[in-house]
Amino acid sequence: MALQLLAAASLSYEVASIARQPRSPRAAVRAAAAATSFDLAAYMEEKRLLTESVLDASLSSTCPETDLIVESMRYSLMAGGKRVRPMLCYAATEMFGGSLEASSPTAVALEMIHTMSLIHDDLPAMDNDDFRRGKPTNHVLYGDDVAILAGDAMLSTAFEYVAKNTKGVPAERVVTVLAMLGQCVGPVGLAGGQVLDLKSEGKSDVGLDTLAWIHTHKTAALLKAAVATGAVLAGATDAEVAKCEEYALKIGLAFQVADDILDVTASTEELGKTAGKDLDADKTTYPKLMGLDKSKEYAAAAAQFAAQFFGRGRNSERARSHPPGRYAKQLVTEAKECLADFGDRAAPLNGLADYIIQRKN
Ligand code: GRG
Image (tube, rainbow, N blue to C red; front, side, top):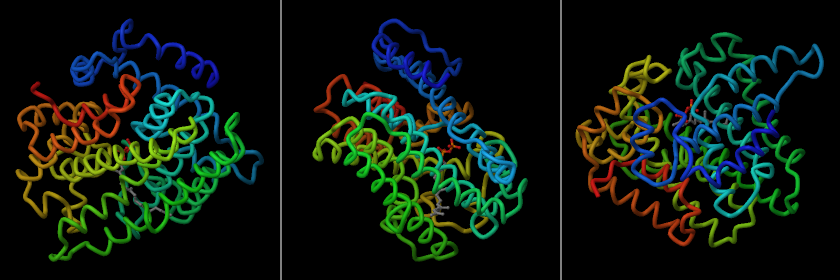
């Protein structure tokens, strides 16, 4: 099934922009897709289906002794989610003419790392949340002990999976990918960003620079790794990879700003996770530092991204009523400029950036 989807995705991408109607019924996605000649809605749905398929095939218990931990891992891995990181990886690979087969193990690893971070983020020692992706969190179902170990096992499996399953790619590229994945989880990645985030809670002297550092590492680092690894696997040069990383950091920052805003504006049902957690924990967020109105303008790009790309209806209306601010426009313009050399091949990544703001021209 995964291989069939891989083949279908490779073939159909060629004609997607001219021949296909968006398969997603989501009006917001259709509207944004219509803003570009590229059929982003179809592209996203194709990559989402591919991701679900390769994830499903990536993890199974091999003996009765591992049934419980693998069940717990699969529970969170297959719980849905937007699959943004695999999509970014696939889009970058295709931009440089690489094959989806070559990047699929890395796409799996990215989603495993992301899922691990969500399991750990939800633990009582961290954000203490009992609701994620519209379902009870891993520790609520399996207990803190198993959830911690499921996260740990998911992290190590991610690296094992890339090392064992990446085929047809020179070994040095695979080593580079493994190094990039390792870096984005460590002190200058998810873990470091999360530590500073936790230690900033309840403080009144945390400034925008610190907040940007938190977001750049806690959230944007994995998005950066997603785009960069996709590029590396396809044989992009160092300079090309650097352009991709710059692009990803810009959209990554906007992505987390949207999360901050949604935490205070959207409902638990809409989010699929408990709303208002940042306020409760007195976290440093853009709304806290700037006020909600100013941060909405600052991050109208991100609100658009969340509302339209991710189909949150109530937020689509909100996003429409808050035209993009100067900073948001600049952010997306800069992100797209990073990909200017790649011409039409950047359409999928540019399409994602286009969701960040609603352009008037
Ligand atoms: C254990 C080594 C180690 C690291 C983990 C817990 C942690 C350290 C970091 C937290 C990282 C985190 C949860 C950042 C928030 C990122 C974010 C915006 C998540 C939401 O991503 P979406 O919207 O979620 O893509 P879905 O559910 O759609 O996949």
